[in-house]
Length: 216
Image 1: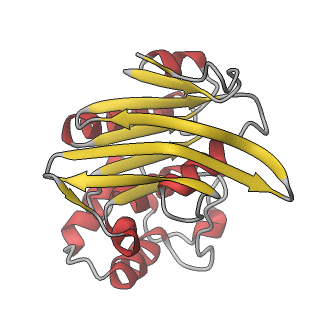
Image 2: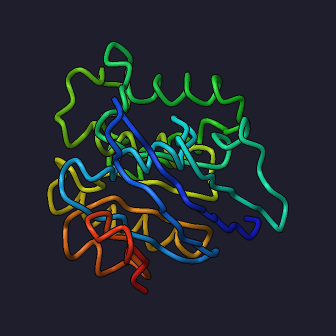
């Protein structure tokens, strides 16, 4: 993978004239994990959506560079993988059919054996032909990891990464984070202390804006 750097400068977001956050600044180099923390409503998911290119900030900007070349805004989705509670799956399709459709929509050349490998990695291989509507919430969360990793993104964004997962699923997430951190950048939005402590640095959105900074 190319060397990735994510740089956020003076990011701010406003909804219905209410400031969600402002003056958010950080730099995440290749090979690092980064936690975003804060109370409910502090803007963790909003910040993740901005970094994924799903929504735009009201002020400031962020850039992703690969080997020193800035990724164009319209191409960010090609380099970012996202796992989040609000992502929707096609419940009338099987897990394998979901991934097959996703690779076609993304236009990525991923062989069938790699789809099987992803489903094995997230613990769903034996249920790959079952309709997603028959899955538990934890199994759906596992499938979202397969989606996020399908195109081998340089930046992996995880919003509430262990939501609905059992101990085995949490172990899978820990392994995914550890492996991907060596290949690129991992950003985790969470209030789980253990998940924050495992990251190399963190940003607390509850901090006084005048003193808001990054712990490392």
